[in-house]
Length: 513
Ligand code: GAP
Image 1 (cartoon, rainbow, N blue to C red):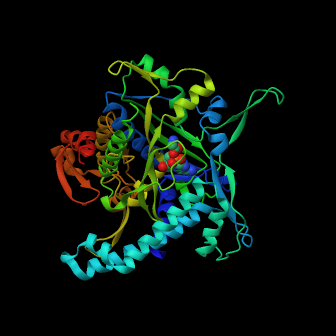
Image 2 (image 1 turned 90 degrees about the horizontal axis):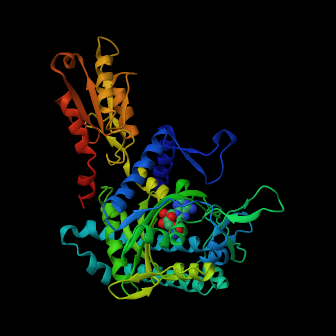
Image 3 (image 1 turned 180 degrees about the horizontal axis):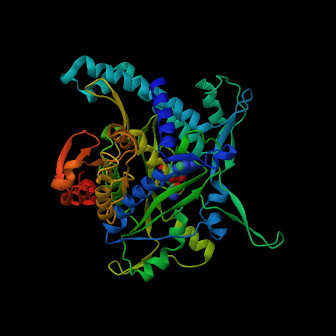
């Protein structure tokens, strides 16, 4: 655990040192759970967004994009259920005066039990070697069976209590499991209460005429209210999807995990409109596609798992999370939800406008069902950053810090480095920069010894270093050094563009799964 905490601390300090993430308004000591993306962070974030957008919109004839506003008519949030039910159950510790999400306390407890089972499995794997049959071991080992069923019972009971709004039982569960304040160990808890997460604001110039608005807590509702606009003007036929990326705001009660849980964050959501009755088929389809998207980035298959929801939201008939193995354990990265016709129907009722589709094959008018894929861009950023950050011991026993970002996401694709700052090398290096900059984000760096510059680029995550030396002036070739293998290759300057393009080829990356 200590090791994992260290890794998380390293990720946070590395993110700052290399211009990825800063605390918001840091000179005023920051603002809790709000962050700014620095010069490298802004690029990485944009590249993740593009990778998602292209995979959704460019690769699907029947998915189109949208950019809806953050401020929406307030009735939107009444219809969507957010005014009445967008709550988190919170609990205070009477001794430490700290506030927690009651469901998260229970879920973390259940995760610890799961980790105990995993430890037993790992031990057995080592003991039995190749002969190990994990499935059989899990089905027959008493200790593992006990841990897994204990975890299941806890999560099912939590799910039931939350669905039934039985907050007394959530408190009882916390007490029965003897869950203590993670910071102080105190078990002196208040009752569990509901807390609405939406940020309110005002529209209008004078206090009297101002009306109450909310900052959107999800981007999805912008898609629902534009369903007919897009369907009609785009002449879309079911099944079809609308994709959108943008900011969302939630007044999170507990926001202590860096960019994992923020008060202002960005979502990448896609609503896929389907025929009623076909939704579960499409739900499975999108679960599959989304997992493949994640795996294509090569961050390690073992770092992902599905978690089917025990507690379904009132509008859903199936829901699962893709969880990622963050430095603080497996946590939700993306949600895939079968939202039925709840949202469109609710907007029909509240607006009095029809939100239907005439299906020419069925010769029928209906309110479509919806499969939603919803991923937090910042959570994806954290997943990429924490999986990429490595401390390596080299053959000569020296160490290097390297950020093994997937090249397609890396802020800079290559750095051009003149070996020395004289003899015409900077001029040639600048010429190469001028040529490559039209197609790629390239950095030029001439400061410090070449070894230090390599290390700096490794730590910043640049996949390729291009070194211009004295021979380059004669033979028009340069040395390309690959970040991950540290292999060096002599190539012609005219070949550089093709080499970089190969490293960041979208088709190659996304098709790799
Ligand atoms: N439209 C569905 C929806 O908003 P959600 O599970 O509440 O569902 C979707 O959120 C995704 O948004 C999550 O899987 C997570 O990646 C991201 N997300 C939610 N709250 C967040 C927060 N406070 N900070 C960062 N990301 C968040």
